Image (cartoon, rainbow, N blue to C red; front, side, top):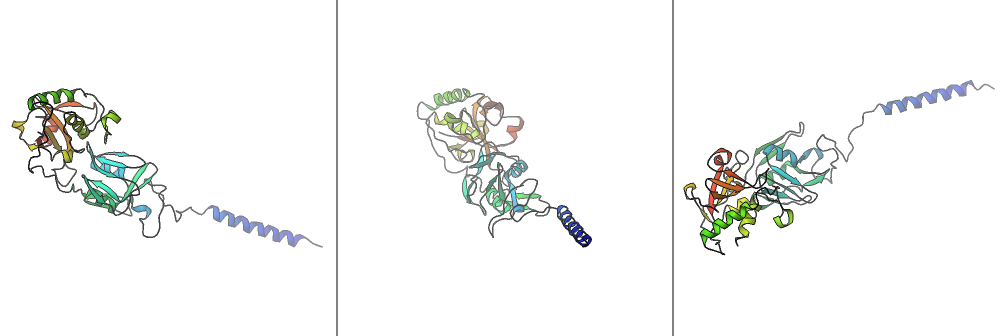
Length: 297
């Protein structure tokens, strides 16, 4: 009995199996239904029907870099602003803070791989402007950033009072107290000094004034509503000076920084290295971005 035909069929079957295996091995892998890899966003998962697709998510770092703003991210929150916080949001929550007011985002932010992501629609809500993303190129266009309404800094004066001593003594004491913190590190979105031993611009002014019985709001935008407006020629030690953030927002009247006038054409503030410092008011960068001056009394 011949076994040649069996060997022939066995060899033919083996050849077909090898061919099939080779064809499968050469097949190019594609994205799965749950993951669409991109350079910025390799592992974001698609959600249930009606939620944003993978290519719609934009990293908040990209927006901060584009606008020249600082960004602090953690597992539970993200804060963005110039020298104090202007925007604050929480992953998985639609409620956010934009220019000191609560807003509702179109989609809740997503936290993944140590970064915070938002859709263009949610970013438009957060920035109070227009944000678009080209789904083909991935390019993000920020058409405008609102800033809401600039704070009503010309409203009726709001007296806060220097309570411990007379006005003159208090202002001298206030300047001396502020100078004690020279060199304290700057930290964007700083926690209270007692906890963090750091300041951002508005937490510094708030800390100094609180020592003298004046409870200022936390952010520069809201501090700019306190007290009475004064002109440059009227400035005295202890007055607050507010600065705009040029070229970043639709309105140039959004307070983005604050410091305390100490006399002699100088003010004390913090905004980066070397921390709390003294700068000149009547020349250089800060002179060109003065927005308003207020006297809290």
